[in-house]
Length: 320
Image (cartoon, rainbow, N blue to C red; front, side, top):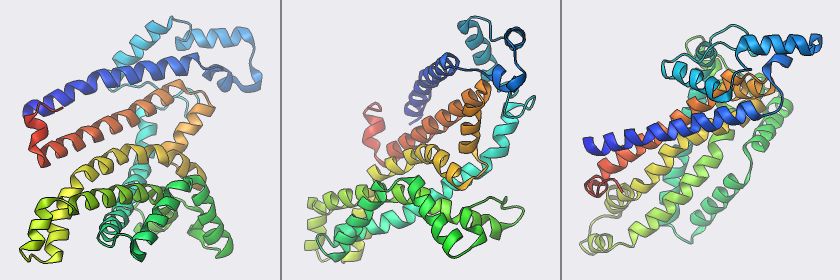
């Protein structure tokens, strides 16, 4: 197991290096720049050139990338240029991170709580009313965009029912837990619905495949109760591939939070990234995308480790 984990950790190094290189190149090759945003209407070409030189933007790209990468490896992503001038990027991200993490975790909990039981019931009641209902709901959940569902929820609860928490909002849980939960109810529903539909479809498929296995038929022939067969045997084995989808989904939920936070005007990582892109704050953009990539890569790593633990054939087979 240790050899397997070490191998997976080593494979993350070139992945993160590649991500950092691509992000740095795309950001610096895009039109516009932070200097013109900083100066606003008071800019002139001579002043733009002077400030670009002070910020090091006139150096060759490979020199800028090497300097940024070396500092980033030491945890120093520099200071913001236009989002919050002079404030360290790590401080800005740390201020916004709790909201996005809480929203992603709550959405994950909601998705799993809905999807796993629905998938089991759908498989056990195949081609019955419960199965058709769950499949239609899953199809609708996958098809409806997060931003559209978020807008509809705002219209229903904020406009029609005039609920103050209907437009979202975030109060830290250590300040007021009730307001914190109220503000995240609708964003959690908007973000977690589509993901729950995906997990449900996967769970149903795996359950149907597992219920047709020979050992399940043998258990039924031996007179073992349906509850034990479905919950303790079939569901347990069907969850192994579903865990992969659940684990990878943490990174996907953080990506989906960008749209959801924008719709509900939540001060999280998503809105920070949009603001940084609009203001051409290269340092914040690079740090955020690298952070999201790290979350995605390590969530995959944790899933691989859990998968190898649940299925020894993976680690004994060399991790392939």
